[in-house]
Image (cartoon, rainbow, N blue to C red; front, side, top):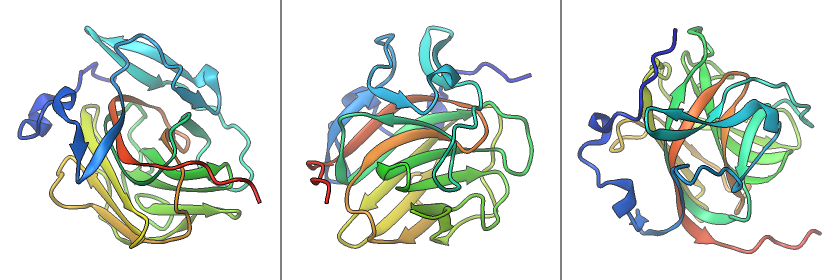
Length: 227
């Protein structure tokens, strides 16, 4: 049975409280959502019936509690909740996340960035055991997801506890750095300049999980006109 544990401050005790953070890595705070408002109207899920606001003790978290295999134009994660009305170029996505899936090699959660439409975006897959389709950084560019990470690990050490994750994206250099618990050393890296702007999102490929304390820092840009 999943242990019902709130975000564990000891994992990031050396960092400032999220409520105190106004910028990160030189980028201003664009959005903070700890879900204590009791609302999730900032988010657009692929399947609303798979998401809900829930409580862990006195803490509210956004839970993707059910896997729903929504149709995708090309092979890519099914379960997404995208932040609406926030489009950024350079950005940092910082949040807490908790896997609620069974323990198996591809136990995973995903974070999305540079999202332009269901056929064009980046995502990081935090998979328990790495292979060419798990625990990597991927691009979806009008074809099935393709691994672009040049640095990764043997896998993400999932358990039933909360963890701290961060995505750092710089469009000019094309760099993508991914952090998990240790915010001083990336666990995955890639370089790609395909998408220069996009939305931010959370979710999974075909598992379940909880999300909390979401912060987005970045350069807000207008959505380019459709060609």
